[in-house]
Length: 393
Ligand code: PMP
Ligand code: GLU
Image (tube, rainbow, N blue to C red; front, side, top):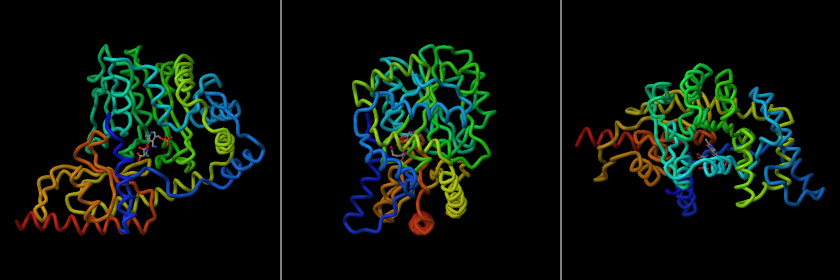
């Protein structure tokens, strides 16, 4: 199992900053705003009231009720409280499902580019990751035919995120419908739909694959508080799942970590039951930054950029630069490029290799506009040297 590339890169950026360098970190996927005040206040009130004890393993009833309502309100998904499991982050929710379902030899289809941890968690469980790759010319959206070609009689699970980390692509209703048309013929395959970026969606609508009748009884919908409510440090995620999967995850979590923190859950219920206005404001701010950032990045020669419709990442194809050298240093791949940018420009990004796309890099635009402008200007300067040097030499 590999170390998490997003976390590794972010730590390298922190280390460099600790040495006194002005590092711009666009490596971690984390909203740059603070958790909205009403949510923080709810956690403080819960602490004051003595809400400091162990919680039920799958989450407090109050939070699970709020999640049931949220799924109904936002996603037209129907669950009972017994089908909800709250975890210490969506990362744990994903791990619970994979550990519950996957045994040695089982195949798990991952839509590439995929989020870093899917593949490593599958490997940890002894499963075999099968990557189906969508490239930038198809806007990183997997087609029904591609999915069909990847499914075998050993496929147990498929995992994808929409809006997608790292590409920012959003699967529309029609995209999902065509995938469902394939999946209906594979009744033993479970679908894990990671919707943690649901609220950071610049299209008119978020669609959940779990809404389709053909597969609703074998779809696990995962979400969390990290992105939409700027609560990364609180460590809270959740799933709505078929009862047998929820029960298995409950059992696993009961042996590994128990229930999530008590006062966090009290605050999370308030987050879901309150107006989403702060979330919508955050989304609007991301959209403005996306427009600026995509425009700036597109002006860099050799940089192939598409316009993401969700999340807060841009995932350009930078293969144009591979094989080019500067000052005796050859850039062979995206890993070299990421390291080069960190060391020379002090801009931290993540290589696409960790996301199953060697030709790309991921830049998060969850940062101040001034930082985004400065990052692009630094990259441009280095890129220009790379281009000049290669042409000249
Ligand atoms: N899924 C995706 C696609 C993510 O980007 C993240 C990022 N943290 C997670 C799951 C896990 O989120 P958390 O554990 O912070 O809830
Ligand atoms: N999901 C974020 C990212 O992709 C946070 C880091 C992590 O958990 O890997 O950067």
